Length: 85
Image 1: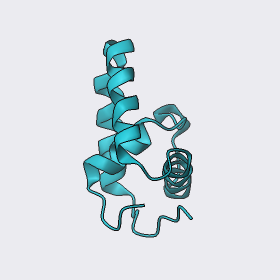
Image 2: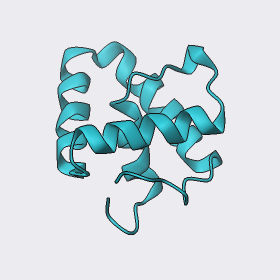
Image 3: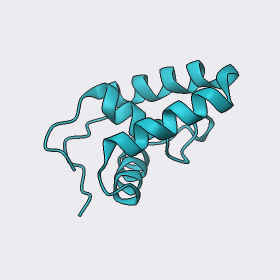
């Protein structure tokens, strides 16, 4: 995993996870979802960005709402303890 990730990068990773806003996830669930997704894409942020772009094209009606949620959550949760090894 990159040593420093911006909030927007973390939101993109979260966006591509299976976690949903309706799950009302805890901070631990958010961290776990991001860690799992980063492991799945071998910590390649470009892979997550490509998934975001694909979802935006496939589901433009839900993209904005999901990305706002992912950004809000990424800003609120302490993600400094992420583990992807």
